[in-house]
Image (tube, rainbow, N blue to C red; front, side):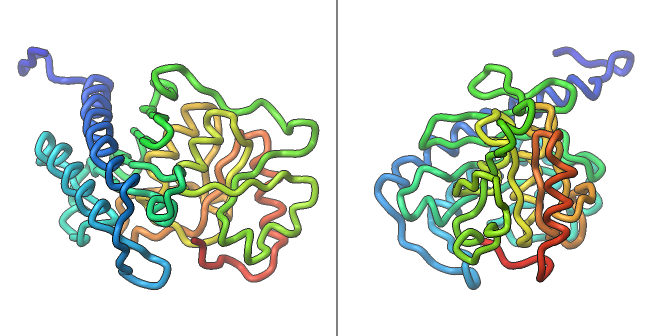
Length: 278
């Protein structure tokens, strides 16, 4: 593309170029992770319930080299990179989780993803979520639709005969946090981003977690759900914003939009407020 002062790049053109860059970077990182997934990894812990492996760090380096190497003027926020307040001065920020679902990754369960989102002035505008173990590549950008392996996807249309399919974390299910969801089909699945994009492709109708989330868990997947026709808020129904000084988010609700108000109304009746999720 030839750019001149009279013909600068437009925002849609820039977004399309950023999407192509993110797709290449995520695909390369995902392929590099597969041998480690099949071979198993030594696990260390950054904190309680926060595993990390050499594979996480390898993928983080690959993504940072590819994305920041091509866009040095963007900010960077990643689960596996020490945070820096420098990103707060940047309009465009990559929001990255090299392996979302590390617990699944180390246990050999094919429910983990490589996640890249892009936030512009605090709004999520681009997302790539890739599950290399199942060869599912989800992507979306604002105004461009949502796709799985290059084919358009859309959220489910309704309530599936009054029995919505709700994705949930195994740890929250073990704690009984879904015991009150009578009439809902609660299905365990790893990786917050994976649960969200499986709402986007209509494999399920909702995903809710009252446990704390981080921006890198949600940024890319939010765009995919919303471009597929769904709705994403925090667990209390508030809109999500990104590149904040504190990247923690008060839970998440991702739905086919039809069920959003019903889901939030039920969550509001539950005791105990937000809880820790795994």
